[in-house]
Image 1 (cartoon, rainbow, N blue to C red):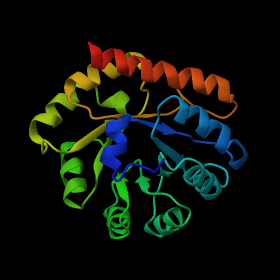
Image 2 (tube, helix red, strand yellow):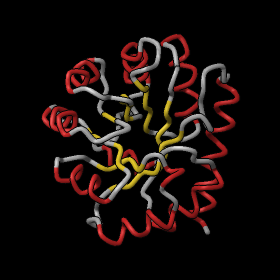
Image 3 (tube, helix red, strand yellow):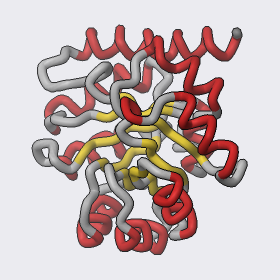
Length: 212
């Protein structure tokens, strides 16, 4: 099975981005398998994890049905090595136009972090694939609804930070297109079986929201 042709297609298949901060290369395959089995199709390894490029490479090669990339990408020069490792997505906690430009020029998807309408418009103008609304604890559903009213209809909005299964529905109702899921899903020390259970809890909550 091959990866979805675009990041948008991957997000449509499952609008949940697994943020694997702190994962080691030895854990990459069992953790990736648990997530893919649960339906996740976007896997993010932050660059402040141990040997992140090795984990990205392992995930990208083992799970071609998933869209694998890097998070916490803060410098333009860090983009190319992610692509060389097999990554196709660049995620950051902030908006740096040089990072977006480099990823765009390499044909990679980008999700820079923004917290205001000004940053959101600037990121989209620079060519970002979508915007990471971060931290979501400071950007409640009401704020997402307000942003959705003024941003282009096709703009992808993904709240990230403190997202739980219970918080999916109000954000989706406000116009979110997906979510980045961090410590509520994975953190160092979590077993593959626990991760599998948590991943299924998120996909089940998502399915229930869609049915409702």
